[in-house]
Every structure is written in structure tokens, then in C-alpha cells.
Amino acid sequence: MNLAQRALIAIDWGTTSLRGARLGPAGQVLESREFARGILSVPPGQFEAVFNELFGDWMDSPHALCLISGMAGSRQGWQEAPYCPCPAGFDELGQHLLWLQADRIALVPGLSCMSGGPLNIPDVMRGEEVQIFGALQLAGRDSATLVLPGTHSKWAQVQGGRVTRFQTFMTGEVFALMSQHSILGKTLDLNGAFDETAFLRGVDQSQQAGSVLNKLFAVRTLGLFERMSAAVLPGYLSGLLIGEELRTQVDTANKADAAPLILMGSDALTRRYTLALQHLGLTCQRRGAEATWAGLHALAVNLTRTP
Image 1 (cartoon, rainbow, N blue to C red):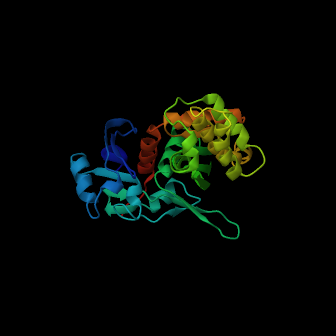
Image 2: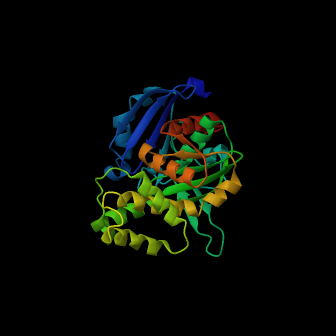
Image 3: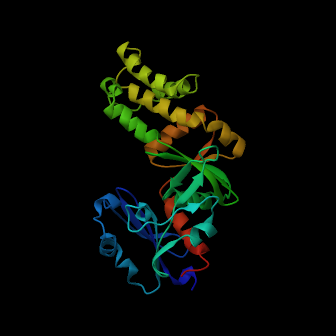
């Protein structure tokens, strides 16, 4: 049965939120829902009950097909879906789907890749892989460098429609820790407006020689010596950390693909990354939440077999 004859339900089940969409044959959103029912709020063994409560009416169709991405497939989720190793595209992802109900409900597995080198360190993503493939579909590209800012930012390389490698950076989490749970927080006013000038000064400083650990302490001394006000220091700290992330990636991105980077995330974060990237000489295209639905739709279209 082809997808045009089925009711496609796309679910993005994250750590703190849950959203779903009923998609038409061309991937258009017919109806959407969003709830504060991330996996952390669901008691063990209750995922199926929560799913039925929130989306059961959508599944009433005898030919419904539901694909669920995100943390629902993690060890703390509905059921653990083993990671699909890179390089991976739609074919590999489809082969690694974990079917909860045969030909009806499946968990998208997420991706893993290895760093190489002596330790050959693993890296993982869950949910971002769907955004990546969706963004490529929307952009009409099969190769790109993609950036997904967030608590744990991701940089992914895609060649010929397959994710070949990616890296994760704890940029957002380090900002939260430094600004709220360290001595730096004593000199910051987190309620002030975003200061673009201070942010770009932080980006510039991140590109200079020296340890980021020393540069972080300087956030405090710039405040102590009244070189920067408490209101603008959060922007400076943000620029310093985002700049440190970009410092390791800009040369690689320039060599990998002359086309614009694809940037996905919240408006506030993508604005900052766009400023920093352009300041360092890179161009980018921004994509929003629609990439998730586009990715799940494209995955469903590509499915050639189900259990």
C-alpha cells in the first residue's frame, strides 16, 4: 500500500515536550498538537497509554502509519531503539526502525558515529537526524554541512544524502552552568537585552590563541574592572562559547562545502549563530520546526519494507 492511501502520523517526542502532526500525502500538515509531556514526565510502562490518550483518535484509521522520532527511542523512553551507525541515509534509517506495532507504529532509531583516533569515541543523536533529512528535502540538496544549536549543539556532514559524520558540543549547557551555577553568575545580569556588540566581541576573543578556561575567567574580571557592564556580559559569554564551538568547525565547513550551511533551531539561537557565522565569513540558510515533519514524511515515503 503506497503512502497516499495511508494516514501518516508524525511524532516528535523529546525530553520535555511532545508534538505531533497529521500529514497529507505531499507532507503538508493537516493538524498538529503539542503537549508538555516529554519522556521525563511519563512513568515507566505508561508510554503506550499516554500515546493512546493524546493521539489515539488519529490512529483510528485502519491504515494509519505512525513514525516517532526523538527521545521516545532512548533508554529512558518507550523502548530503546538501537542507534543506526553512520554513514546513514533514508535506506539505513528505515532498516533500523523499531516497530512497536507491525506496519503501524515505529520508533526512529537515531544515529551514531565514531570519531576515529586512538579512543575512537562514539557520538550520538536522537531526533536531529530527522531534522537533518527534512532540511535537505526542503532545500533540495543531498549534500551540506548542517548546524543544530541547542543545549547540545550538533554539526553534521551529509554527502549524497547520507550523514557521514557529526560532532556534539555542550555549548548551551556550559552557558547555563557558567551563568547560573558558577562565580561568573555573580557578575551577570541575565534579564538584560541581548547586546550584539558584546556578543561579537566574545566571538572575536574566542578566536584568539589561549585556553578557553582562561577566557571564561576573564568574563568575571571584565566585570570587576568595569570594562563591561553586567547587562552586556551575558552576550559576551554567549559569544565566547559559541565562538569556541565555531572555532573548531569553520575551516572544516569551508573545505567541505562551498554552499551555505543549513542552520536549524529556535529563533533566538539561530539569530546568534547567524551573527557569529557571518562575522567569521560563512553564509547560512535557516530552517524551522517544519524540517521535522518533512524528514518523517520523506522517511515514510522511502520505506520499502515493513515487518
